Image 1 (tube, rainbow, N blue to C red):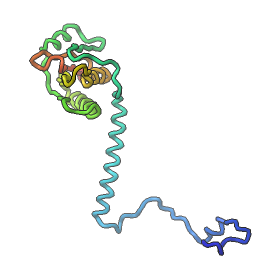
Image 2 (image 1 turned 60 degrees about the vertical axis):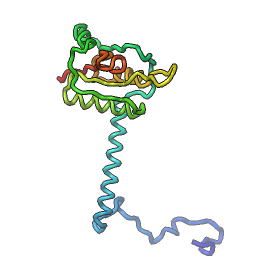
Image 3 (image 1 turned 90 degrees about the vertical axis):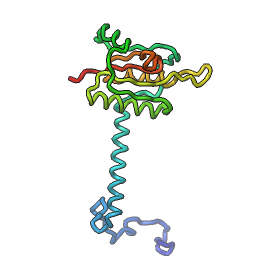
Image 4 (image 1 turned 180 degrees about the vertical axis):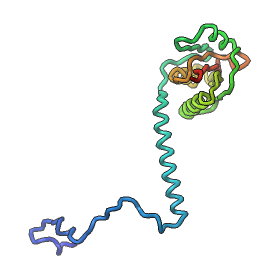
Length: 188
């Protein structure tokens, strides 16, 4: 629309300008005549978006915090049990007498990657009905006075997971204070 099309008073009349224009009723593109490659790319993009959305939801469902509650020392022995775990079972776990079915090594991972790996690993082991697993977090001997962040985070994350009923630092032959034996809930 040019200046000559404006009314003499200079005001624009939207209704007049829209006369003769019809509104389309469809809000989705019709891909029937579109080449197969373009349709496939479109389908792939949609699948990727759905997958990313489901992962975002999954991370929120796991609800693992990104802030550590309590920093632990390199040589600290970790031990945790939910109410109802028998003392005899905890002693067996601590002594390394409960055989573990699978292990996860978190060395070299970022904290975000480790959290995602640990969460997925625990979920998968629980689905496979494993009773005991090992998680290697390391001791963080990388620098003078440097706190073992991975160990501290793993300590917190495992306590937040409903599938985990107990864990304890491993025997020296299995990594000592750089690894954990983790006991999972029995399947119902």
